[in-house]
Length: 574
DNA sequence: GCCGTTTTCGGCCCGACTGTTTTCAGTCG
Image 1 (spheres, chains in turn brown, red):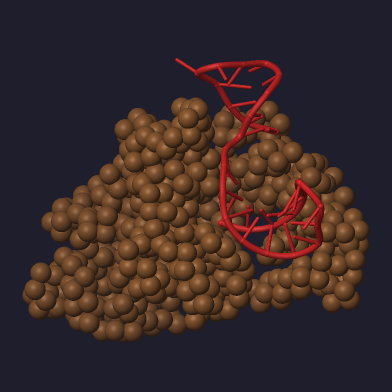
Image 2: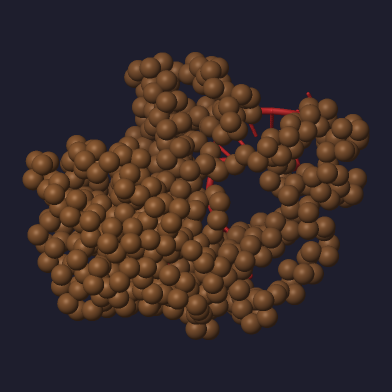
């Protein structure tokens, strides 16, 4: 049973308990358990029982339930709750403006148990017969069903970033003295965003009018003096919060989240006799503001250094900050090279020289051109002969672009049995080899783990490309155990990639952190197929920061000569 | 249901907006 399925069951229990109106803190315990499982980089099933029992947020009861799930693949408590409601009722909770109380009411009064039930009842005008429901609510529910049906939801962060940038710049033009910035999951650098949170500190209330009249607004979900929500064209929700200028720091902290980080921080405030909200940090006894104008000021008043937004997930950052042990995170400016990209020789859209010049313009000191290998026929992958020709062509480019060294590389397929797609004596003649899985994704966990371990055992492999194979919002990664793969990569001196393609970001934050903890080096690579995509390096760096990585953890922060020595050394060790 | 340098019991984050209310419950973040 995979972590995702275990987490889903805990989430469903939380939803069902909410419908029953159960204790909110019990519900929170199940939600937090689900998050812990989903974020756990190791397969829960493979953990020793003691390690499972030590997971944060798992006490006696949840520990027993987790053990039952691991041992039997089922949970009696979950099954029993599902007898009280039809499973399809959980879909109703995802509707905008519909929460557990409403769903429970609809089920009790009208026996509504699915989206279809709800829609026909609303269309027949049966909803506003219930006490507490009026015609407006009925209309809103119909609208929410309609929007839900159009499958709208999370966006890639890189896309959300672009949407936010235009909106923020529009608002800044209208409120020149205000501090306006995106907060929420976008500021934390999560890989996808459910909505856009924008903060305006010190802005006039009239900014709200401009916000709800923004040309790309499709529907206004709510409008107040300090908070408004709109649905942008295309179905993406944006929220604007306005606070006084002297609350700017507290509001930035509050609205950046994450929720778990904020709850933990607030707990710390409470223990010290303070109350923390979006307007400031206040002495509980006197009500006097202690901090709030700046974000570092809020953390400082709580006895902490400022914590970078990427770390605010309640994954140990508060303890590390308290111990003055936060890592000095890698920055985009630390990146010297880009070791994974394609050109028109295979499936890229620009030639070698265009890619090289674009990389140089971004400040890169070295790049590797890593074309596909033969088994990726669709992309025009190279066989041994073509790979050597490619290497010669790449090296001929050196000296033509001031300040840039071009390495001859290959992205070599890992065949289903773990062998590499090109012969060893060919790979040996290239400067850099990234090995990737592009086929047979459906192998079971053991087979895929063995496959990756076998690929690593080839002494010419310098890195594993997009190690989990996930595509954001489209497919989960293939099943395999990262822990032994990372441990073996560390032993052999091979790197694991953070692939910067905006719908991959693979490894993700949790996995990259685990890989580093197991001693593996990380390489951040764009896998660019066009010059513009070389700029996606920033998204990979964001993932690395969320993984707590420092410049020394990253292969391509090294100067070229150190990199060469490091690769060579890695090969001699193998 | 979890958790403990106040605690093995009694806490557990907090405020804004909407609709149907005549003082507030539900939802959201």
